[in-house]
Image (cartoon, rainbow over all chains, first blue to last red; front, side):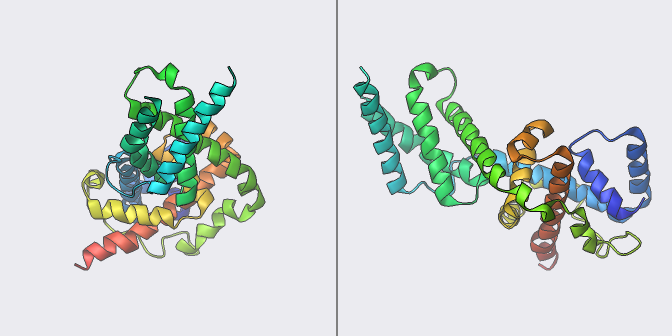
Amino acid sequence: MKCSEASRLYSESKDRRLGLWQWLKLRYHLFICAACRRFGWQIETLDRVARTWTEAEDDIGPELPSHAKQRILTVLQQADADGDKNY
Amino acid sequence: MSKQQASAWVEEHGDALFRYALKHVRDRDVAQDLVQDAFLAAWQARQEFAGRSALRTWLIGILRHKVLDHFRRVGREGPLNDPTLFDIAAEATLFDAAGHWVAAPGYWGGDPEQALTDKALQAAFEDCLSHLPPTMARAFVLRSLEECDIDDACKTLQVTSTNLYVLLYRARMRLRECLEQNWYQAKASE
């Protein structure tokens, strides 16, 4: 198995179950190839940083601009007014 | 009373919803529109909410639906028109003729769990994600951030599973390379 194929299969293994034969070939390649082992560690790290970043508290960071907040309030008011018209 | 309640909702949760939207779409205007749509939908359904769960959780859930709707809309306009996106051979420059790495991946440290606490890594990741082509970014966001299953992700992005695997592979390869250059090598030269 070439590293190019191993990298693709490793990525796919994150999303689907590989067939047994593919899985065995991949595991054997990882056993003998240090570069691809490091690649695997990197993909696992990427996986975790993505998850951590997503789950990070949304209490710090960019703020919704005040004009956007105003517009939302206007829209909500309008929705209530439109709702009232239906009675 | 209603006006005060609406104001309180927006003040307390507007920023957090905005940040959530920005994690999924890179455009601030699109993020603002999605937050507005979510607030409107939530407001119109506020009788049904009745304190069932935390308000923030409920609002985020509604926003998530709006984000996925947006991805579906954009998906109809996007990938099918750009066949080069699914060209797995585009990553072939990373490997030599024998299929070996041209530049072997570095050793980032033995423990992927470091990702949980390394702020520089998280900041670098955010930056790297913002540089991915939009369709690749959406595929990665759906799969790794939202943990959508493959079938749902395919329907949202309007691609086959084969093409989705290629998108995810290309996204991971680029993110990996970007992190190697902008985080790992920066760290190594300190």
